[in-house]
Amino acid sequence: MSRPPLSGVYLLLDEQWAPRHHLPAVMELAAGCGIRLFQYRNKTGSPRDVFAKAKELREVAARLGVLFIVNDRCDLALAVEADGVHLGQDDLPLELARNIMGRHKIIGISTHRPDEVTQATRGGADYVGYGPLFPTTTKEVHEAPVGFAGLRDVRPLTSLPMFVIGGITPDSVEEAVASGANGVAVASAVFDAPQMEHVMRDLVASFRNL
Image (tube, rainbow, N blue to C red; front, top):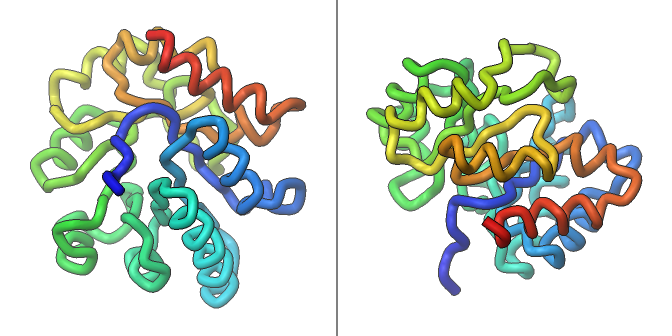
C-alpha cells in the first residue's frame, strides 16, 4: 500500500478531548470521511498511559491505511511503530531526531517564523507546520497569528509540504491553499463542532473542490 501524501486535512487527536470523544472512534470516523493523516498529542499523561493510548491508535491507523504521527516523543513514536514524529521548537533537535528515527520515518516541525522554516528545511524535515494562522485556544503557549500574508511570505522559503495551523475552519481552506499551504492541521474545529462528521466532510471537500 502506498503512503498517503503529506497534504490535505491533518487531524490532531489531542488527549484533552478524550473525556468527551473516544479518539480511536474519531479516527475511524475521520478516515471514513477521507482524512488520511493523524497526529496523537498528549502533554499530560504518564509515559505508560500515553504509550497504551498511542499503541491503540497506531493499531487503528494501520488497519485503516492512514498515516499516524506522534507528537514530541521520538521514543514513543518508535515504540508504537508510528509513521513519524512531530517536533516543536523546544523538542529534540532535528538532527538528533533523525538519527533516532532513521531515514524512512516522517519528521515534521512546528514553525512560527521565517527563520524556523528555513532551519527546518535545511535540517531535512519532511514537512513543516506553520502558524498559528488565526488566534487559537488549543495550546497554552500562544504565538502571534501569522495571517494569510505571513503564510505567503514564507512559502518561497521552502519546497517542503506546509501545513497551516491555528483557528482553521472549512471556510479558511481555499485562501490557505491559495496562500501556499499544502494542507491544514485542525483540532478544535472538529472536536468542538456540534456535528463533527459534517465538519470533517466539509474540510475534505474543500480540498477536492480546489
